[in-house]
Length: 107
Image (cartoon, rainbow, N blue to C red; front, side, top):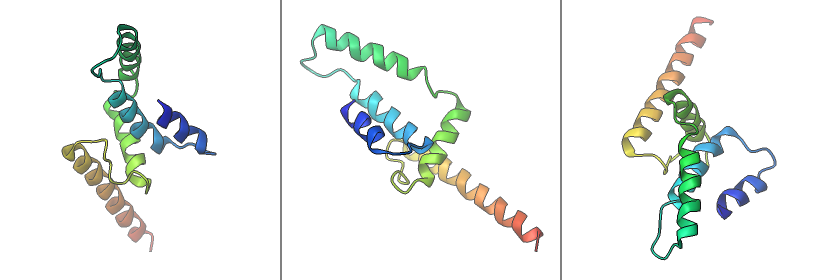
């Protein structure tokens, strides 16, 4: 939570590319750890349950992941699986290729 707060407060203009990495980090931080008190366990579960309700449609994920892929800070998409990374890069590549074809038609 501290890292997410620091990252957001450092940014003068936070962008959509921050949402997916921060959400993934928060979810990872909400996993139970040995030694968590019952109260901490309940708090983590409440936060995790709330976070899992957000940004879970495929369309939302695609937009957020694509924005992160285009941001140099997150272009490696370390918060995604290899399969998810390849799918996002494939989509970005296809979109770029289609723009090239469209712009070639105007010349």
